[in-house]
Length: 153
Image (cartoon, rainbow, N blue to C red; front, side, top):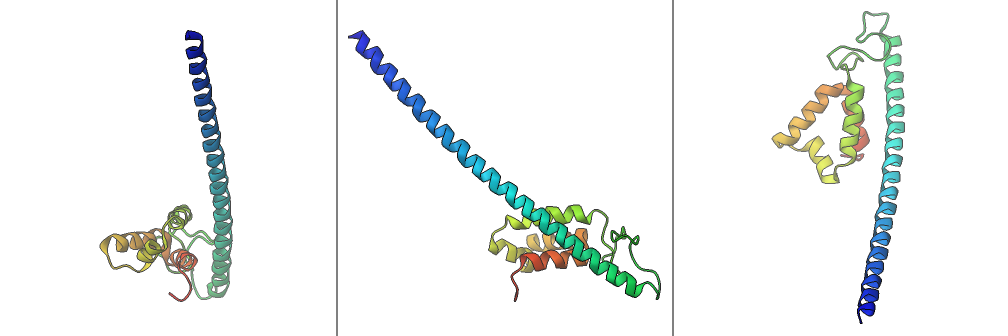
C-alpha cells in the first residue's frame, strides 16, 4: 500500500517537474525572442540616428560654405558646435546624447502621447516639449519632430 502511495507521489512530482521545466523553457524562449526584437529595434534606431546626424552635418556644412564669407558662423567648425544658442547651425553641447535619449523615449510612446508631446497645451506636455527644444536646439528638435509626427499634422 505504501509502495503505491510513494509511486503516486513520485509520479506527481515528476509531472510537476516536467510542467515546471516546460514552462521555464517557454519563458526563456519568449524572453530570448523579445530580447532579439529589442536588439533589432535598437540597431535600427542607431542606424537612423547615424543617418540623421549625417544629414545634419551635411546641412551644417552647406550653411558653413555659404555663410563663411560674410562673417563668423556658430559652432566650432566641425559640425558639433558648443554654443548654447540654437541658431546659426550650432547645437547645444551634449545634444547628440539627448537626441538618442529622446528617440528612445518617443519610440515607446503611444500615438496619443506622441501627439501630446508635440501639440498638447497641458503644462506637463509643454514642459517636456520645451525641455526637448532646450536640450536639442531648434534644428534637432525639428528633425526629431519630423521623424515622429506623421506628415500632414
